[in-house]
Length: 182
Image (cartoon, rainbow, N blue to C red; front, side, top):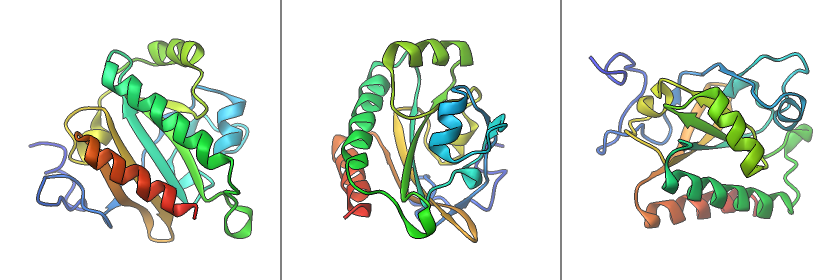
């Protein structure tokens, strides 16, 4: 019995991926980057874990990667460039809550490798580790690189878009994220 089979609340689309509009189970991942990451995400100063529900933003872009995957690192760099581009715009949303935040989640990886990678790579958004890869698998994606757009609502955290695989799918995802800021 796989992870998807044990979570009937996640409705896959015809490709086996979580369908847009699906509410996902929240996560609790250790904060690796300290005060700067907590501040960027709007977490309390003493937060040890991050959850999607705790991030102070209407939308969260999640870039899944692995430090040993060349395609993953290329896409992580591209996502950081998108973050830089969009943060030049006014991303303040309703009631002072930011419209959009970016995070990276390393799957099937180790915290020490991700921490060393972050020092070397200098990404402009927080990185977390899902060592088991259950979050990515729960979205119906078998391996990184992949990206996911989540929306925080009163009903929970909802998948709005997924991108894994083709450059065409990736470009459509990027355009959707850009559209949020227009």
